Length: 255
Ligand code: G
Ligand code: G
Ligand code: NA
Ligand code: MN
Image (tube, rainbow, N blue to C red):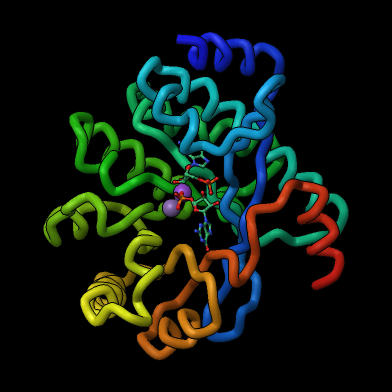
């Protein structure tokens, strides 16, 4: 498959870059951090979003090396901002199922962050709910526990799409739940979606987890989420994913 060959070339030619989307405290709209998002500069087809290539990369095991490149670039950028006196807050990096095949994953991530001159409190790891429910569930749990003990934040991504039981959720060493965008998009019109968001916020509170709503696109959604008691938000309403230069400009303005 052409895409797979191109992905191998992309690793060799350093064609991956990181964009960053703001994460805010919903009640104040104050910046608390960013999610690091993978981008691929394809030599012919231009910038590719993860939906276009992450599943293919995952299926051939390429998300393990790509994930390492991604974390390395993210840490280097965070270090550069801190050295310029700019504070990006806590930056979230996505982990994929491929990466959990390696029993030394947690050890390697801890070592990479330290080598970049960052403390664990500056980085959070996001893992999709479906990955924690997958074949390697016990290995995923062990790696997340080691990262949590190492002082990293752990967020459960795309929550609501994976049928996790309450028992399962309680066992996971996560400090944050990210409600999938599909529940936020129609929440002003759909009483069902509102009820689901309400329930997840209540659940998070009971379990001592922060709750973040993804895909907030307008003020009506933000106000509704604040009234429900949702802590954190992310979406076009608060900021689009930006390249590092745009974030630098943004951080200078709010500094
Ligand atoms: O970039 P965009 O906002 O289109 O992100 C699409 C999806 O790709 C999101 O679900 C996000 O979690 C995922 N994604 C973005 N960057 C990475 C990454 O570095 N690794 C993995 N595994 N997934 C990522
Ligand atoms: O990891 P995750 O799949 O949640 O990554 C977020 C994805 O959603 C990225 O593709 C990002 O570009 C996209 N996104 C972020 N904010 C919004 C938004 O407000 N609306 C829509 N439609 N997409 C968004
Ligand atoms: Na994510
Ligand atoms: Mn997400």
